[in-house]
Image 1: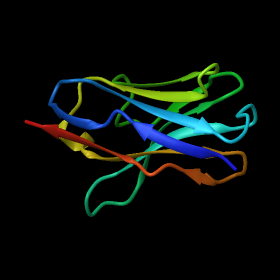
Image 2 (image 1 turned 45 degrees about the vertical axis):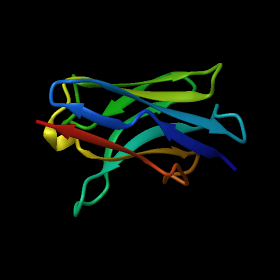
Image 3 (image 1 turned 30 degrees about the vertical axis):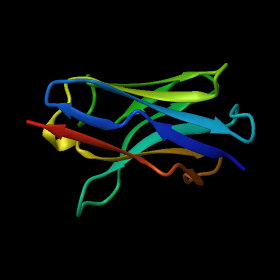
Image 4 (image 1 turned 90 degrees about the horizontal axis):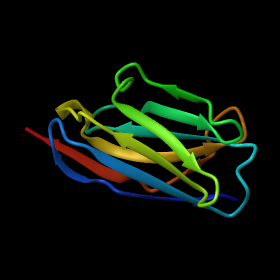
Length: 117
């Protein structure tokens, strides 16, 4: 079992920055891929970014490329999402996820990010 706890959400003005954290516990993550997803009101959940724990390789949704950066701290068992140049459309609940199977099988509770004009 893997437990995931997100933090770092909040209210920020458009153009500002936030850093989300996802602390993982329960087992080692060497065979995991970690990801951030988000869900805006009345919209489906969408993929934001992912990182492979072993080698740090990353993937991003086109909508956040060049603005968001996913990273990990092996010693702290934590994944981060640095979000820069935030836009109104980035407002959503952001959730951390982990998988060692073809689909994401562990999820955090989520953290609210609200971007204001």
